[in-house]
Image (cartoon, rainbow, N blue to C red):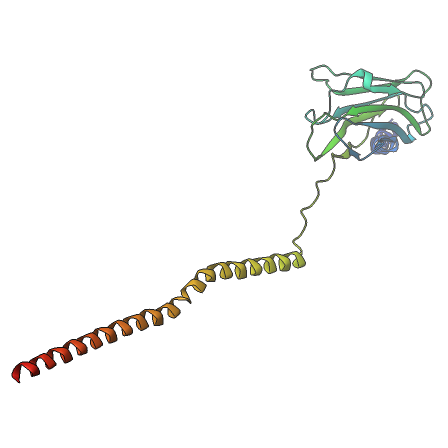
Length: 243
């Protein structure tokens, strides 16, 4: 009896240690790829959903769920019409303002999938007038099951560039700077020439000064001669009176 109890206890302990190993054995990969990485305002980007590396037993997987997140300031609101189901999968999207908003449920009615397979696409449209920026489209809470246990997958993110990269400002050209400096030098010379123009008028003033002095000299000489003549005449008269 004791041996039986001991054997059962050892078996249970053995199973407890093996359970995490079995849980880790089941896995799958949820791939998301965009048809372009740079999108202009008004354009659309198509995201493809794909399953690969499925390890979920002989039955495979027939359901996948995830939550879609995107910037509503960049993209127009996503609706059910933006989803396309492929390869017998049915994609359902919850766009209502509830706790489940953004939830994607992918279901295939046929037998479980064990091979790589594309399950559908999502089309997102960039709003008109959006300025240049980088944005992301994320898929979180990705999970499936093997019929009994839930199999989780890591979050997936797509990075997108919206608009065209702004052109960098051109660096100043040294040759252009030299041309500008030469132009300024010419302007300075012209300004000096213009300023010196009145000086040419002033250079005539020395020529006028001798003319003024000469006229004064003749006038003084004329006065002296007149005075001399008057003195001489007066002297003669005085001389005649004395005789």
